Length: 52
Image 1 (spheres, one colour):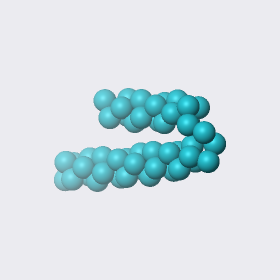
Image 2 (cartoon, one colour):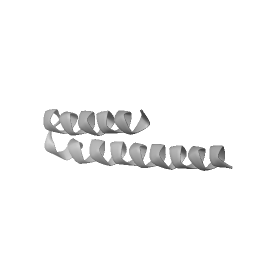
Image 3 (spheres, helix red, strand yellow):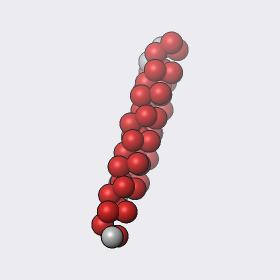
Image 4 (tube, helix red, strand yellow):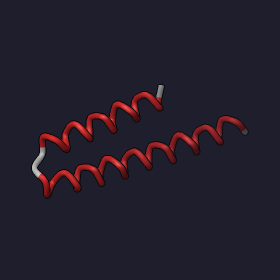
């Protein structure tokens, strides 16, 4: 489920990049990438904790 929500977030970010003018699209891309990476790290930590 979480992988699917991540894909939806990335798709929404890419869609927003087409709507937002050039200088700002890189900012939104960077922000969404950071959020995605942090979510992946949190889910990985959660999986490791549940396995123990």
